[in-house]
Image (tube, rainbow, N blue to C red):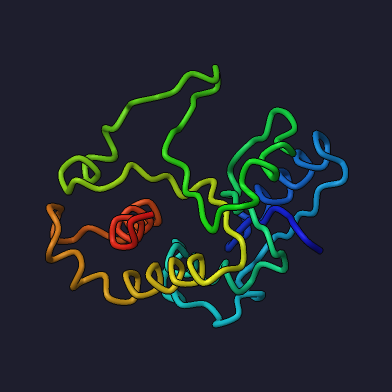
Length: 183
């Protein structure tokens, strides 16, 4: 398989969401390839066994994806219409991390109440919810950087403007990875 959507789904609630998203994708793009990656399918196993919040496993998506070209989606999303044209737009890029969010009315939202870390730390405004990558050295390096940040969050956190008890989220980590790599 050449290209497809990957949905990370760890825990019963996220698996249910991922199944609904897969049905949604197949409804608007019947020929789309979709893979739901559960905890049992992670190449390095569960790196967050003591928590229900499995964000620390996100870096494994690069190796877990069976596709040469992958669009990674969060499980709790809805795709209202075909986005097949994205494959042509993205195919020549190694990695693309979304930087804009839209509300249900398709209006770009600039609400950053829960994203002060972006402004406070002068980081790129990244949303990990939709991320494209193709198997490449650059994408592999990006996900290795994501892994390093998750595994060494205490050290990274100490250099940032944030709460001393701040937990690593995928948006934090993707923003730092993009900043470090210049993506």
